[in-house]
Length: 102
Image (cartoon, rainbow, N blue to C red; front, side):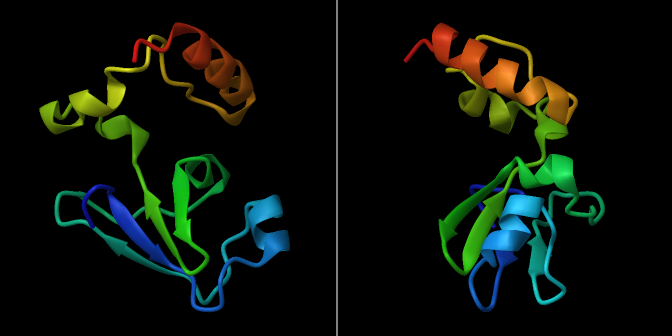
């Protein structure tokens, strides 16, 4: 599932209400990468790390895998500390954009 930690398959494309409410439809399939130690629940926090590549596919990143050297390139452009709660996310985005180095 490179470049992510999981490939998310959404058979009928994302339901707008599901995405808005951060609900995962029962038909969604999550294929975890071999490097992921266990499957995780796609909750509200992780939905923030889901990038929809197409209507029916998404790539998910697990933010706590940042100690893996393979991830360093993803953080080079980020000059701030990653948020740990949804409440911190908007401030993180603003500060990250202000400090972007590339």
